[in-house]
Image 1 (cartoon, rainbow, N blue to C red):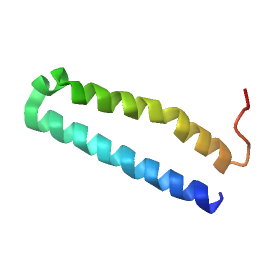
Image 2: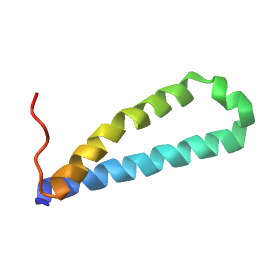
Image 3: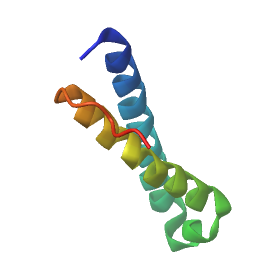
Image 4: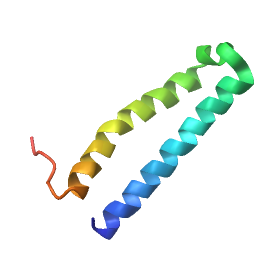
Length: 69
């Protein structure tokens, strides 16, 4: 994997871990009332939107190129 992709990979992993920790801390701190807050849903949406990028980086790591539309 080229150096640039390693940097992107680690930034994404660290961001994902940070968002997961933030969500878990928020749920622990506020309980179920936290699920009614808009920030929870925005963060959850961002985390779900990052999944295709992880899969693309995994494909590149394995040597295949991403499909072009």
